[in-house]
Image (cartoon, rainbow, N blue to C red; front, top):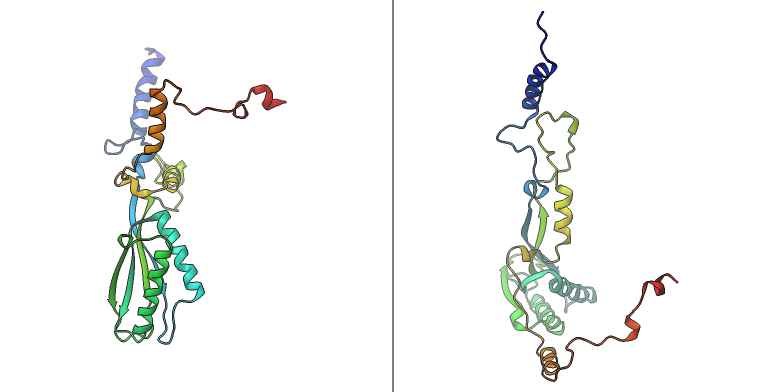
Length: 227
């Protein structure tokens, strides 16, 4: 009886086992979280409907407060102008014009200039109380391809990553982006602080230190912190 070395028997078995567990050529066995669920930026239209009745004399206090809050949202998230759209042909046509004028005045009071506002009309013939509409565009970042369905990872026999692998990272990253439009195009460069530049340059010419002087109150040591 011929005896074969142990490694000559074990090696083919290991090769077969490895080939059985290997991922198909069309599917990578491992992906980075960002490869499977990329962050996408979508445009969204924010609206504020100011309902106007045929006999209304103007905006209510609640509507005026809603307009001011809408302007705050535009400053924080908006892109482009604030659009003011007036219904045409409705039963409340005269009231709508009055409300639109009052709305425009509030926008001015909130610091918007004519370049930051846009106007228009929409057809509302036959409607009893079509609203005056304020709107602006904003962008939101979301993680694509994420689902709420769970997957039993114990039943994976081809080394494929889970369908939701990386969703948490992508969703959290998207939520932390302050201005999603930055992923589409860079922001416009702001103006430089000329006054500060002249002060620093003057100190440089006089041979003085250009850094800000710090007081003794701004210094500390470890012994002070643990006393």
